[in-house]
Image: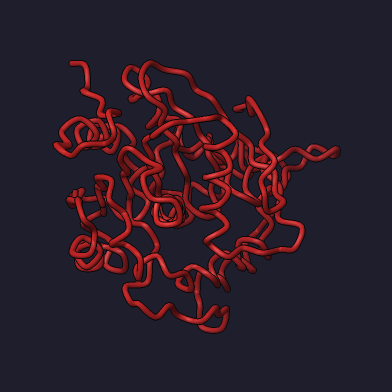
Length: 296
């Protein structure tokens, strides 16, 4: 189980748990997908620590971070949380890796405050490819509805593990990533049972707003190098959609992972980590003196 190294009070209310995994090189912030927690990205970070100082966060309402007191899950606030973390730590031109909601949050953060990041790597960022976002909705939103039906309590950590090994998409996680999700995404209760830290009504609210932000409209504001990545098995946020984003970004490229789906970062952390290292080492754009050549 990972223990937060610090808790950062944000400007909008929640307290964000930060995990400093150490390493050598410039700072790299890793942001997870909705419903997961920062710990599941630690296997990726383990492959990056020779080149970057890696930091994980639990996003609002996930893991050891708190929920917003006003239950506001507007995705711009996920970006605001990241900017508050950066400001609190005094980071200059950090790098960013984000998966799903985490990827969208990083792009929204860079849009809100251009030139914050040296470079970004976003694996299937959740963005609606239109200048006019969709209205928030839970009706007909299978992710929002599914979250409300999610089982949140189990007799033990082992029972939780046994349950998820047969459930999509968790049965596609590496065994390490699944254990990290269970050990860090659940808390043990006084009677020995375990309970999901991310409340299902919070997760549902996040999903209901997933296509209601305006990241696509302002992608042209993102001037730092961006790598968009996707799995070949994902039709919803796969190659076709990522290619639309690619056209609007000033300096971007696309990486497609054969055989992976939306949860690629927890399906094959080592392959994703190698791609991140390559992406952050070959940029030929000026990043304000923060360009970092990877040591072979």
